[in-house]
Image (cartoon, rainbow, N blue to C red; front, top):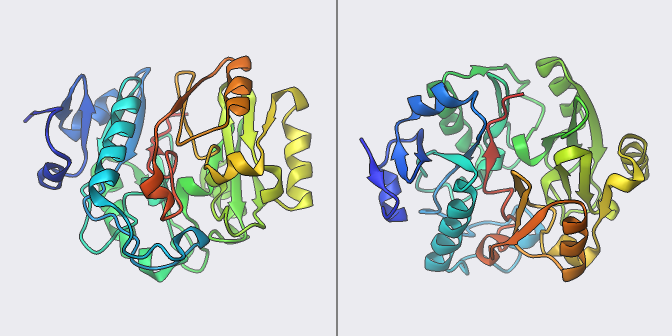
Length: 308
């Protein structure tokens, strides 16, 4: 079964969860499983059919209930999907009514190799997503690792692989629990560095911290406590650290998706874009203002299905 790229976003509800976009078509999920070892990245997304701001679980949602412009959200999401599909295969999970934040697929869980951890949401409003994400991972043939019931962990929103060192960065203190880094280290057998988040505006690690190819790091230092800033300084050489201003952090510049040297983001100052270019990257802006109303942007709307 194939559907052309022109398929409306509304029709994605009717496309079986676990489909992917490849070479201009939606194709069955087994193609992703077969091709996951190829050179292209694979990214999980969820269409914004039911996206809205229906409750407040982070500061960005304050005064935004019912103010999402649905037609614009669909357009912005589709633009992001088209951009990413140039260099990556896009897998889709079907959205579910009553789960407005399911569009933020970064929080589905964490995948490394053939093993996946399903998120354990802190907010009760998001907990019904867990069973849907688990079922999707199972259909894709991933080995689902056990996770403690009493340890909050919000997936790729709070756990990011370094792009040069064999380590995993894990944010905690707002959504994910302080025990999450140690549990991740045990599950994946990979050194995990915990970073304590101290600014509620940057409630997930991916809102203020973006590892890039070649060991580069784009981040907002003030989002972390002193010990975490010291850990970053110890592990990432000064010449590889791109510190962003508060203004750029509030534009969710760090909430970016890097694919094949392109850094796809909601917005960034000319200064930050120039610094990225000087480091060898191509900043690519795609407005995601509707999703900022719920506290998310490009990275929040995607989950890399990581092979290494």
